[in-house]
Length: 78
Image (cartoon, rainbow, N blue to C red; front, side):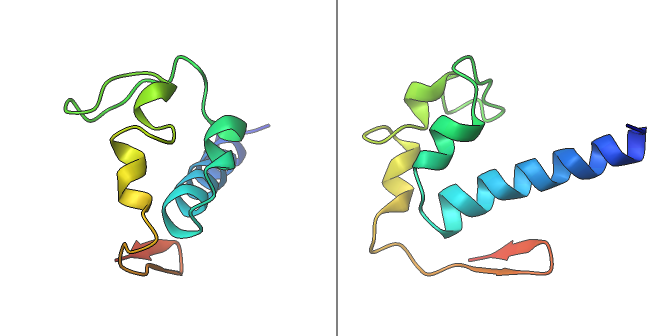
C-alpha cells in the first residue's frame, strides 16, 4: 500500500466514524471503529471510550432533538 492509499483509507475510516456517529446517530460505530484506549484531541473531553459512549457527555449531542445534519461532498454541515 502506498502512502496515498493509506491516506485515502484513513480518510474513509474517519469519515465513516464521523458520519456514523454524528449524522446517522449509529452508536454501534463507536464499538466498531474506536479503540478502547481512544485518545481524545479535545482537552475538555477525557480520553477513552467512556467519554464517547452512550450516557456520557458526547452522546448527549446525539439526542433525537438535535438539529438535522447533512452530509455532502466530504463535508458535514449542521
